[in-house]
Length: 125
Image (tube, rainbow, N blue to C red):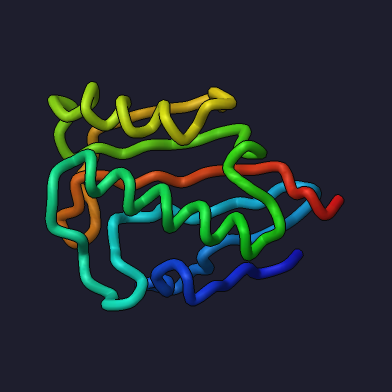
């Protein structure tokens, strides 16, 4: 098991890792739209927040030696399901491999509008 950490994505805000690589997979913890350079939540539209979350995920996957095309499963959390179509328009631009997905409504840390966690295949296996 290997713990993944990068300064190109926000540090964990609790007792967990940005990601863990194990048994041929990389498990990325849920990411909210925190700007890595400031540690502050990005204020903006659901589309802007979703872009920030995906950039954070890409940075973690890169640090783990894999990429977004290797994602096999996502779990997406939205503060407001009324944002689903706007969220989806950004999501589909990045997750072109169409991984398996769950998307639910939730109360999120720091009152974020979106959180995404992913499981990817490790390219180091």
